[in-house]
Structure formats: C-alpha cells, structure tokens
Image 1 (cartoon, rainbow, N blue to C red):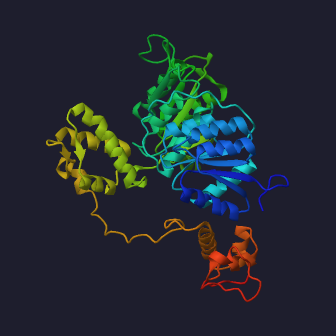
Image 2 (image 1 turned 180 degrees about the vertical axis):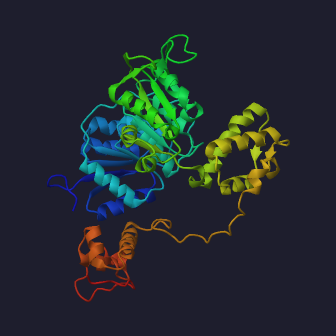
Image 3 (image 1 turned 45 degrees about the vertical axis):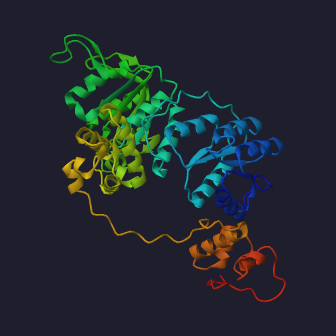
Length: 478
C-alpha cells in the first residue's frame, strides 16, 4: 500500500472527458491511492482551496480553465503538490509553459497506464521543495513540430535543460532537428541575449578545428599573421553548439575536456589561459557510449557531455500521423512563397507515411519544397514528388483488422472498467491471482468478486455464501 508517512497519498485527476478521467481513476484506486476527480479546471481549483493533494494529474486543454492555470493555482494554493500535466497536443511551447508554471512532469496522450503510475510513484517518492514559478519565457515558435511520445519526451527534456546551465548532449540521426533543439535550449535560457554559435566539427579540417575554436597567436603556424580569438571567446556568456562530436580526434577531445573542466581556453601557440563562460551543447549522429566502450571516444569526455541527454527519434519511427503533420507544416511554409493555395493529395500523404526517410525531417522538408515548386494545378500529386521517393517507397500493406475494444473504447461504467482492469492484470500474470492481488494491492477474495458473471453487482455487494466463480478466467491458486 503506497503511503506518505503513515497516510495514503491523495491524488486529484482533472479532465473534462469522462472516459479519460476513468482511465486514470480506476488504476490509481486499485493501486491503493485516495483518488478524487474534477471535470474541469475551475472545479479543480475549488477543490484545491478546500483540501490538500499530494499529486494532481491535469489535462492541459479544457473548455473552462486551462491546465496551465490549474498548475499555477496549485503551486500557489498547495506548493508541495506534485503536478503532472497531460495533453494530446504536445509541443515544446506547451512543455515549457507546464515546466515553467511548476509542473513536476509532462505526459503525452494517449498514455500507457503503467507509465503514469510510475510517474506518480516517482512524484510521491521525490517531493518537490516549495518554490515560486520562474518568470515565463517568450514562447515564440521553436520550429519543432510533432506530438508523438518520442517528441514530447524531447520537449520535456529541452524545457528542463533550458532552466539549467548543465552540459547537454543531443543524440539523433542527421536531419532529425538537433540544432533546432540546441537553439530552443538557448532561446529559453538565461543566456538568450548572448551569442549562440553553431559549428559542425566534421566540416572543418582537423588541423584547423582547434585554432577555429580556441583561437591562435601571431606566428603560431604558417598563415597566422595576427592574434585571433576563437569561437569559445566569441561565445563568451552564451552557448556554443558543437555538432558531430563523434568525428573529432582524441587530441581535440582532450582540449575540449580541459575547457569543460577548467572553464578556460588557451589559444594555439599561447601559454596564457583565458577564462570563458560558455555553455556547451554537443550533438552526434553516432553512439558515443559505444564508441567510448571501444576506445574510439574519450569516456571521460562522454560522461562530461552527457550530463543531460536528449535523444531525437528518426522520422520513420514517429508515425504516419506525425509525417502528415510535418508535411502540411512545410506545405504552409513554401506554398505561401509560391502564391496560390496548394493542397496535398491523400495518396501523396499515404505514400509519404510509408517512405523510410533516411534523411529524416530535413529530407521531408526538401521533398515538399520540390513538390511545391513543380506543382501546376494547386494539387500536389505523386507525379510532383522526386522519383526516388516514389520508387523507394514500399507498397501499402493490406488493411489491418479493426482493433478489439479496449478498456474504455465503449464507455463502460466505472464498475465495469474496474472489472476489465482486474482481468487485464490477471492476463499479465497468466491467471495467478496471488500475484495479481499483490500488483493491485487488494485481497484475493476481491478478485473473485470482480470475476463473478454478474460483476456489476458483485463488485458492489460482497458474496456472503457460495463458492466464487472465475467467470471463465483460468486462475492459479498460487
């Protein structure tokens, strides 16, 4: 049974959709929490004025009072409460608003119940110190599009990174948006008014990389006719983004490690150290941890860089819905330059969703720009796409069978939803009711009641006689 001290944690679920509330209420109650629910932001705030809650799970977009306002009000009314924001419309701006308002965590819908329960357990185990929310940043467009769970996690980590001064490592294939993340971290940070300098380490010859970054003195090498400051000094007070770090030499890695440790640089040819205040954001399309394990990248530098890692998913793993979202985003961008309104055919969207996108978001943007440029009649067709896109796209798979009704798809009663959840846990434990009872933190006899043929009544009225029935569910006594 979860507890805080000697009492059961109190949790408030806030959502204007009944099904969404129930999807959280039932597993939370079955996990042993004291759960209350509110059908909107205004009702939640009123409840917060009357009693204290340990955890608040609130939807962001509600018709009366938005979830961000709920977060702010609970930080004022109940500053020790851990607030978890949920939304089906994830974006970096929303994540920044939630984190800046004082949210403990940020979860995308649709969510996995076990993931939510884990966040709740973590929130209770790691109570936050009461603190006033920081001033909100200027939430201009970040250029980051998508609300898949992968991207919501990236937004959340970006929002946390922006509030700190720690070193960040962004991992992802070429074209996934690593520089956009780096620029967003800088834009929303306390360094936003200072320089942001980006450099692709693989694009500069190894012999010039150190002099470019650290500077050099007159006469230190052929062609050095005067002293010159490097990019570290130019970025003083701001942020330096180093892309493709996995391609650098061990010599450069040693120099970079020294800068991170000592906060100072030495120009090539000079013995004088110069203090610099620069935040480093690194990026790589290689697995630095694997390279370090093979001795191909300094492990001490990897650990210094990866204090906070932000993995970016390849576009092929973000799903067809997100590819369509990005395609329309880029269409709006380039069609406005072309003049008349241009649309994309549904068959084109379907093909784009099947293409593997080795060049990721950058390749998709270039594809839409090409299609807009060659489109003649206001409708982008398959003939307007680059031939390689059409030729390398696999044929559409046969239509998948309609998915079975899930826990809440048919709007069951709360009692019926509880019964289904108990059956779900039993299926996960191969019918072992002792294990299921342990997971649900309920008595085994309660499981029998949920499995009665007329479970609607049995769940509310305990049996006083007669052998319990399994309702067709094979059970193990152990």
